[in-house]
View 1 (cartoon, one colour):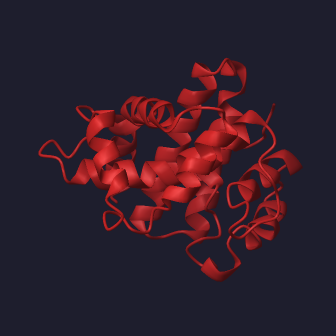
View 2 (cartoon, rainbow, N blue to C red):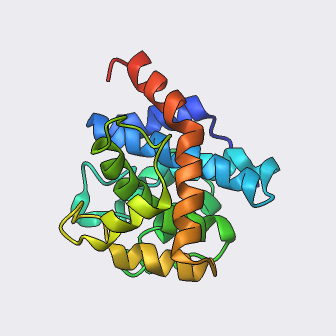
Length: 196
């Protein structure tokens, strides 16, 4: 699957509508994870497409939280995004703020990983290392079970995401930790380079 966006042009588009460093970092993290999953699941030639969908998935969230996954259609269409990118972006909010159902494996991964990266990121901040590099599934599961921890991260969405992929929750957690390890350093460098 081709996309005319490059990492730089997609990032520029994201930053046109998002100024909050947390949102930009989240976009970059999900992009890095999606690229890792593309390689892992045998879609290596599509990793740019997977990554761009990850980077742009929350394009409308900061300015239009009430219209999340709806305003995205307008913003992405205006930027010339192809229908596949728009559908993928909208499908990550399926059942919450969108009627677009995740169909392609990439969309199912995005749906599952988006919410989980938030939980893993919050858990990493609590660690002495402040990193996912030494995080294990066992400690993440404890945080997952504690409903007060990172309460904004929906456990239900994460579980539904694992089911859609026919993976166990542990499998999804394990793979997503590995995916976040693969991009933790590069995301930090890019944020630093932008002065964020």
